[in-house]
Image 1 (tube, one colour):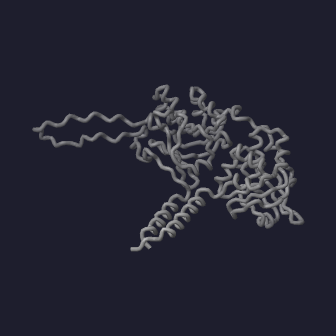
Image 2 (cartoon, one colour):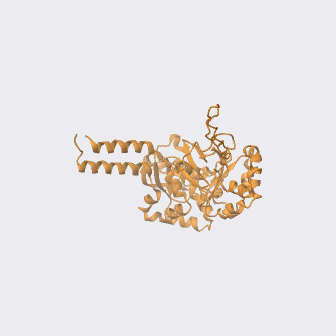
Image 3 (cartoon, rainbow, N blue to C red):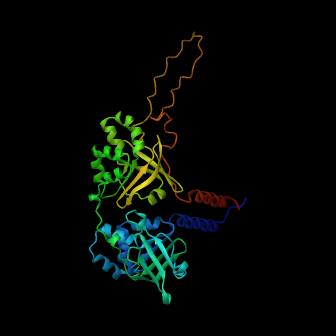
Length: 400
């Protein structure tokens, strides 16, 4: 048996660190733009609108950046921060367009979906951008709701990681009446009305009639995510809800809210334990987020619910529908364990029976606490592959 030399081990360890870095942080738009000071204003607003985080979580993306002069034109319109976010969302294409691809567009023109379209706030096709290969090597850009005009042109490529991220400069901000339309701030949003219109009226009505609504509203400006059971699910659950104490009802409603903004992309990448508005320190009131491909589930140790739809997903508020009521373990621990039966007398001819208590049941009549361990787990994409690679590399230290 021969040990691997220390220098070889150091090289292997360095390769492992490089692999882990590539696996967990494929690109960072803030760092890319920081290399180009003339885009500092654009970079700044990507950060404060949380668009930078969304860009970094996307596997395939194109960012159409404008320089500081172009951003000055936008800021002179005195839009709210939410309006600025909509406009900049229109400059983030949900596909890869490097310099070469821009000059080789099939049939000379393409209609690209943007992050503005993905938010659900863009009516009709206003969240699309028209890209056209023009004469003399120019490529034009224009919002779909801009009457076919192409006011901006491709200037240069800033950085490209093929088929992952392309950061390009365009000559000016893309004008769009829909993106620039007045956008209500979070305090002006009636989120219970939004839920009621999208099939969650029962839950919304319970929330409006409870003190829990104030807690939701207090967290709205700083970021809020709500998981809304649909009406059919809530109607079936109402007999159990009515049996809860007043404090229990409030805790159940708060359990469906998370005090941070979590977009669908964030939920898919940030698997693991998540605290809720009901978490108070003494009681956990948490659940585990887990995704299998595009499907995101919420595991509460009592039930596993699936996210079935999106009502609103726009910073700082995300509203999602779920197919089950989220049942916290703190409220639904199952039936109490019965006292052990008296031991049979020594001279009793009756055979001893198993006196172990029955397994606690959930309100649905199923064994509790069988899905998720108490400490939960956190994983990331490629985690299994990294673990296997680590095992192989560590094995190399022992024997050649």
